[in-house]
Amino acid sequence: MREYRQLLACALAALAIAPSATRADLPAPPPAAGVIDLTPHELPGNPGPVIHREEGEATWYASAEFLLLTARRGDLDFALSNSDAGNPFASVGSVLEATYPIDGGFRVGGGYVTKSGHWDMSFHFTYFSSEDNRAAATPAGGSLFPTLTRPGINIVDTAVAASYMRYRWFDLELARRFQVEPDLTLKLSTGLRFLTLEDTFRVQYDGQDANAAEVLNNGRAFGPGFLLGGTAEYRLGRRWRVDARGRGTLAYTYHDTRTRETNDAGATVNTDALREHSRVLPVVELGLGLVWEAGGYRVRIGYELQNWFNAFEQPRFTSDVALGTFVRRASDLGVQGVVFSFSKSF
Image: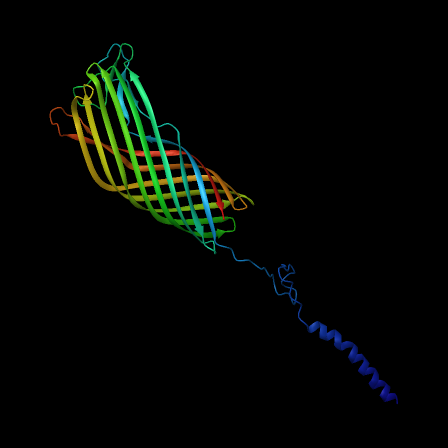
């Protein structure tokens, strides 16, 4: 009887220990879906963090930009003003030049961003124009010399200059986005551009050797090109970003320039020449900006700088003996200013 009691006690002790061992061997339950498990990885039974991500959606967007720019070029001189009364017939004094004032332009367009967010296809149209007028008269006791006329009209009483330029861009681009770091995004783009550039520079001289004389330099350029660019964007916070961008264009353009000089209110034609040629026109663009973004809206204010290399090339006829001799005067076009942009994703 005593042996039976000992066997029963051993059986009850084994049953009491078995459930505890069974629970220790069971793995820890996985965390609930959508919850990040912060339990340290080194603890037994922890499967590590579980993050559920939702795949993005493809989006369309539209954008509009206001351009407040000023343009500069180096061949808009029209007179030399000599205010030295003691030496009025010497080539001394100040060179007078026409300028382009600050004017407004615009850029509109739109694009499509793929579901992954890596690819961006867009089309944009850019328009900018500027014009100005400037007048000069002979200073007291001095002289006013024209800089655009052929020999024969050497001194005048008044000069009135009018300058005008306009350019248009049609851009079709494909861009690839790279998430370099959590706060740094890089976008590389390539595409096609069709550009047009027009300019008119008209100067009217009168008095002394000039009798309602006029010099007209008129030109245009247009053609397709290939563009390549990149944008780096750094996130400052939840809604703010800064960006830096740059693009280069090589366009194969057709140019025609006309130079016409008349006197006696158009009755006497001294020069009327047309030059046509084709060449590669390089354009470089740089920009910096501050961006605010929320709810599909994006607002940006930035600074933009452009340089068109040898954008203008005008012939100047300088001899009264070799009448067909001329020199080419080439100049760049520089454009800079502030850009305000707004875009909306759909």
